Amino acid sequence: MLNEENIAIVYSVKEAAQVLGISKSLLYGELKRNPLFPRKMIGGRIMIPAQKLKEYFNT
Image (tube, rainbow, N blue to C red; front, top):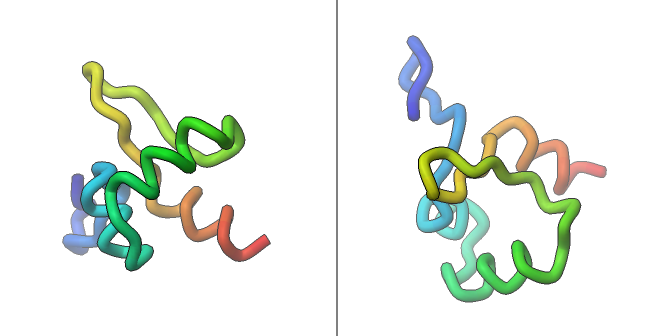
């Protein structure tokens, strides 16, 4: 999902894995192991808020 400036506000698991430079399966494993990893369920899909993902890795 993009905002008015065409900047992603949420990522799918595939997109987030690409941004992080890891595989989808590694990211799914992290999501399963770590309840603090930012995510939202939208229509049965795991979506990762872009800003929360940045904050998570900057702390």
